[in-house]
Image (cartoon, rainbow, N blue to C red; front, side):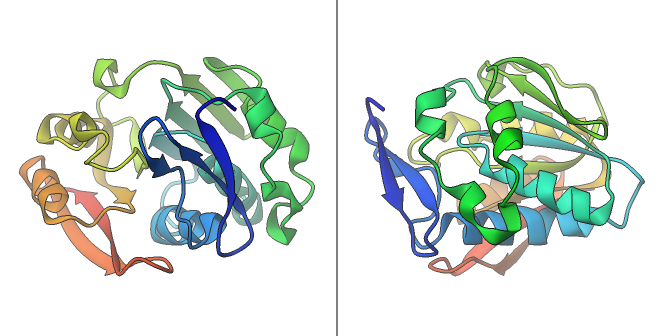
Length: 223
C-alpha cells in the first residue's frame, strides 16, 4: 500500500492512514459511524423527502465508504441516485480489497458493488439501474460544474491543514452555483474559518452534534 497503512477504528471498521499527509481517511473513533452520522443522517436523510431523484456530489471519494453507505440507504428508501465523485488520487484495487466494510451487517452482500465502485478511476459506473456513479480523476479545483445540478454535497476532503486549497470561498462558491436553491453541503469539519468561508459563498450554516470523538460538524444550505 506504499504510504497507506490499514487501521481498525473504534467501531471495528477499517480506515487508512496516509503517511504522506499525516492524516486518516476516516475518524479513528469509528469510520462507519462517522460516515453514517455526517453524510447519511445529516445529509442524505435530509434530502430524501425532496424530489424523486437525488444528485450527489462528493469531494474526496477516498475509500468509497460514503458511496457504499449511500447505495445501501438509497435502496432502503427507494431513492434513485446519480453520484458524482472527484478523487485525483484513487486507491489501488489491492488496497480496497483489504477494507472490511462489507463484513458489517448493514453492508453485507454488497461486496460486488464495492468492487465495482473501484473498477475504474474515471468514467460512468452503473451500480444498479437507478444508482449511477460518475468518477472523475482530476483535482476539484479544475472542475467545471453545471449550474443547479446537485441537491446534496458530501465535502470529505482532507482537513484544511492538509488541503487548504479546497476549503476556500472560491471553491465553496463554485459548489454553491452547482447546487439547487435549498441544496445542502455536509462536512465533518466545524472550524470557524470554514463556516465563515461557506457564509461568504452564499450558504447559511448550522453546527450539528458531531460523530463520536468530535463535538460538532457543519451543514450548510444554499440560499
